[in-house]
Image (cartoon, rainbow, N blue to C red; front, side):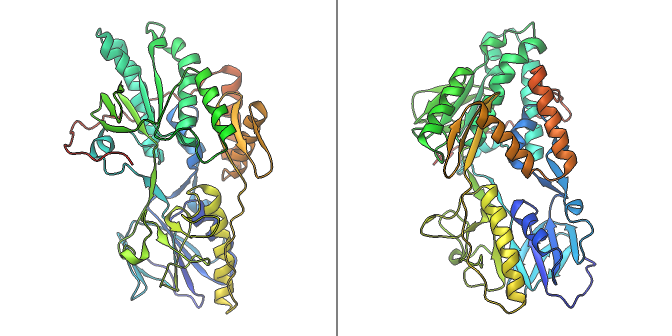
Length: 435
């Protein structure tokens, strides 16, 4: 990989997400050689992916080059690489561009969409976990409305304009709200010769309330906001199969829709060589101790979505969200410096700063440790927090200007089919049911 030898210990970080970037920043000016490996050359701000999917933002406003994040820092190296295997016995990492030795390895590979073994939903449905997936979804939504103009079959036209969003967490709720606002304010102007009032937005949740990780008050208010926007909220229903046109459920309810977005769960991105049964938890996350060390491996660490640190407060590990990853990255940075200096490491203690979700224009719910509120003020808080955590001054300015413009004009300018998307036609038999 053409990385020079150094007298400093080498810390290799796999993954440039929230945790990996936070760790690299912490180590950037310390006596350590930091090598970050990622299959993309950018950091992706996942909480705003739904706005890319719905034409509110262009992808370059929520992505930032990894090299620029740590530009000018000594002893930092980035390599665009896909990790193939970790060899813990020889402390080497095998990638598609060669092998590299490490003194300390940090796994921060994050998570990916979990389809729970359902091959049809994976093949015919849409995920929204990466920028390419969000662009595919944007193209599919716009292509379906263009196709709806061309068909004389009313049944097919309705299916092209219908949406099924599986999963009532923040991603599903925010996407449903954004689509409802598009239906209300944009589609009638873009498609005056199409009865867009017939478009249906269905949010399907397997549990008895949406936003289950938030307070009951937040769940109730978010559901009320969605219903005011015209979203059909379905609870205690599981989508069990999808053939590209029809979604079957655990009840007699059947949804006829050409667009199904799967936001019902995520799973850790594993690595060959770190997939032994004794290293993994029940949901395939790497088991780590309070210092982020993978069980049984003193020089291998894991942070973020891929790591499961079981504590009294979090017996199943910390939430797979940005804040735990950022805090873990910073704590591990301090601990690695202490480890290098032969000082005792400090255990990680998660400080829950709250959770929030936006449902649409002037509508959001916020749960803070000491305060809970909903409505317009919550919406402004949501915007401020997301702008604050965006990387790069330009990105903050671009996103802010887009939000102001969209708010004043009630419009979304990025309704562009840059890369046409076609769904697969193959449907498998014997699918597994959603958990």
